[in-house]
Figure: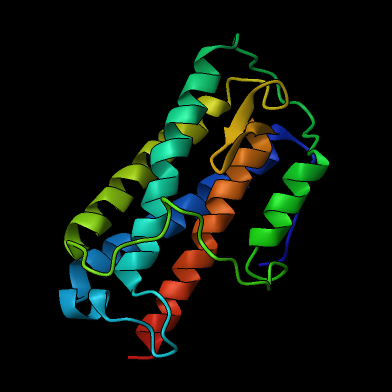
Length: 188
C-alpha cells in the first residue's frame, strides 16, 4: 500500500473506511481462530506480542475516538464534498507512521506502552469495539468540513491536527501495528 494523499473528503473517507473495515475483519478472524497463548507470545525478535500491539492501539483509540466525536460535535454540518488540505505536521505524522515510508522505530510514549500480562481476548474485543466506533465516526465525518475541525494530538495536546489528518494518522498507525502483529503470527 503506497502512501497516498487524497484530494477530496470523499476519496479520503472511502479509503479510510475500506482500511478500517479490513482491520476489523482481520481482528475478528484472529479472535475466532487464534489461541490465547499465541496472542500473548512475544515476537521472535523480542518485540510486542499480538495482544500488546492491539492493547497499544486501544490506548490511542481511547483518546482519539472521544476527541473525534468532541471535535465533530462542536461544528456545523457541511454536507458538500471538499478538498483536503493536509498541514505539514499532518503529512509528517502520516508519513512517519505509514508502513512503507515510516521505517524508523519509535519508542512508545509513557501511557501507551502495553503490559506484558494482558487479558488477550478482552484486548481483542476492545479493539473490535473501537473499530466499530471508528467506522461510525468515519460515517459521521462525511457530514462535516474536515479542514475546519482540529484534534489535539495525544502526546502533546498543544499541537493539533486537522480531523482529516488525525483520522488518517490513527488508521495508518493501526495498520502499522496490525502488520507487526501479523509478522508475529507468521513467525509462530
